[in-house]
Image 1 (cartoon, rainbow, N blue to C red):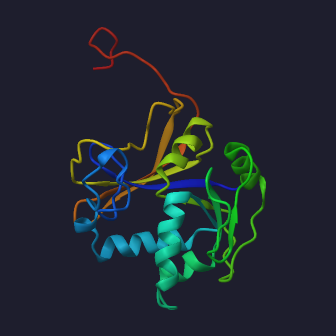
Image 2: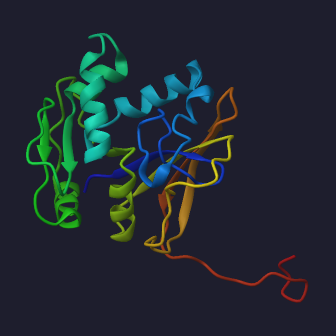
Length: 217
């Protein structure tokens, strides 16, 4: 089974909406778009390049797909992220789109959760650079992520926490989040103070009690 990994930029207070630009996502009157950009240095770009290069496929919501499809085809041929974005197989979950035109793109049909389960069962097709890791990556795609979390389809969370408080906006873990245990696989920080952590699913939530009478103090 292929691994599905969600990569998300979030503020310290958990907001993931509009990290990359003022007009990226103004839903709900959001006015803080572009909040992650001042913290994106060369070391963080290098780390994200390594992550993206592992992808065997991208799974994207319509809004993120439209943003990517309008920008990444403009990248130079030797751009390491751009070349991967353009060559890799892309699957698009949308209730409104009829067609997708960016190269190697496929529009998912029917129930999204069932379609993603089928993708995870697929062995993967690889892409033009020969990579066939089986890893399906989700970037951005806030509404789609809520569906994936609700249906327990995420194997790993790659979360980049930026040192900023946004206040209001869409959050990574919404009301449909399924309780689950997680295991920290890796953590690091960037020169600008971004904390990058990767978590894998680790069974059910464990419970206990704190206090001197329990010995857990």
